[in-house]
Length: 107
Image 1 (spheres, one colour):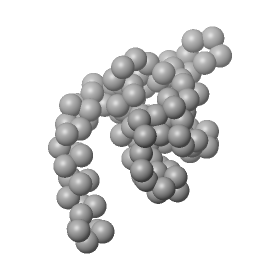
Image 2 (cartoon, helix red, strand yellow):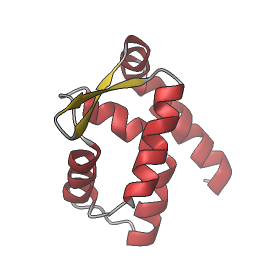
Image 3 (cartoon, helix red, strand yellow):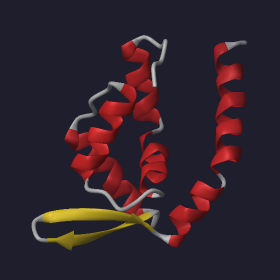
Image 4 (tube, one colour):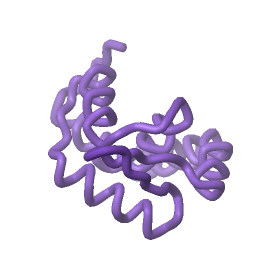
């Protein structure tokens, strides 16, 4: 997908919504943090620091949105039931973000 946003703005948006992007990715199949970052680079041409991804994953585990299993030396992340509920309501979240951005940016 080709986005017209300036790369720095694209990165700021992705960082702000990284948890939601991760939830969306995990609806397809379980992933490692490395696979998530690779997917983000392919889709948005933005590289997020591994420390940022791991911090976000840790926060998401604390909120019971995801859980982690180990296979060999890899950590695989999957959605919990709570995470699945958030994904089901993603359209409502998108509408709320859109309204907020309009107010914030004055359009």
